[in-house]
Each structure stands twice: as C-alpha cells, then as structure tokens.
Image (spheres, rainbow, N blue to C red):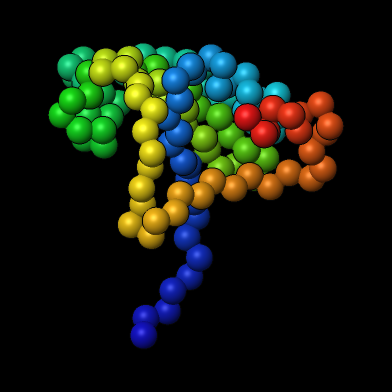
Length: 118
C-alpha cells in the first residue's frame, strides 16, 4: 500500500441567497476575516474566474457575486450568490447521504447562540 500523508485543505464553497448578509454573519458569529470584498463573476466575460465557475457550476451558469473569507486556521470560505440563474434553495444529497460543515468555536458567546439556531 502506498504511503499516504495528510493533505492540506484550501477552501469550501457555500452558496448563499444574500451575499452581504452572509458575509456579515460569518464575520460576526465566527470572527472570520474578509479576504476579498464581493466581486462579480460572469461565464461569458472571458476571464479565468468565469470559465472556472462555468466548469464547476455547469452550462446553465451565467452570473454570480462572490467573496472570500478565512477562518482562524486559514481555511478559506468562498461565499457565492447565484444571480443568473438565481439561487434556489434545495435539499443537498451526497453519495454518503450526509452533508456536514463543522466550525470549531469555544465558547460561543450567548449573544451569538440564538443566530446559530436559525
């Protein structure tokens, strides 16, 4: 068996319905750092970001807004709000039947606990 060593984890992408609200929430609740202010990405603009997004999101993708944040240990959070076609809330299904997203915080201030229950 080949030797396997730990790999680094770069980022996770999270689709949101309101980018500005999501940025504020991740900053206020978890203290994440905003690395890049919101910016536009379009499939047809000829940019690397546009081509990459179309490759990941499929042929229906046309336009979105994005922002990049970072956790305390450097894991990136890429928030994106689909504009064309617009964001649709849907139930995610993974091959294992589970979708998990864990953020370690200790302790959670009482003022933030209510927002986590939403």
